[in-house]
Length: 226
Image (cartoon, rainbow, N blue to C red; front, side):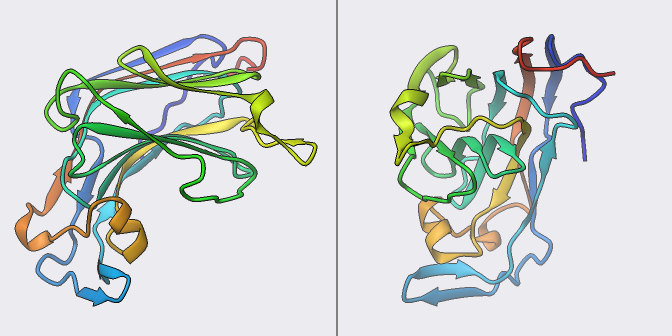
């Protein structure tokens, strides 16, 4: 595991990674993916092992950005998310085969309403698997904005999440995670990700390339750590 640590989390952290292949999926049983054609669609009983990297400390509001070139193979999910211990979650996910779009999503308090809060956004200036793009999350107590290459593509306002007297808005300190994973183990999940992966047609390792991660924590809500 690679950790984002040793930091002052109320300052700006920039990690320059010169085109490192950090997010990878390894097919441990190449040629033995055990494809199943179910009534819900195809899936693999054996899936690749994906890498997920986690920050050591939590961020409570601020801005997180990653610059990367994604894997474009159907069935692969390239993810950059925040995750709180209570289940609050903010997502950027790029799914393989759809190399012209990225997807945003959020969850509140581990209420996993799949497909309800997700949106799809066009990515201009080159395909996500052949061009480096920067995917950003700008998170404040009152609003949440997702960005592509510095341009806002979606904004969620806390005031608009009120339901039955409760604001269902991500508000808890969260770890920052990034990596890739194989969606092929579930027919419904891999259908969303344009899978399953056919490992007989792919190299044994699929990697995305990350060039930079930038985290800017809100000094009002984040404590200095060492």
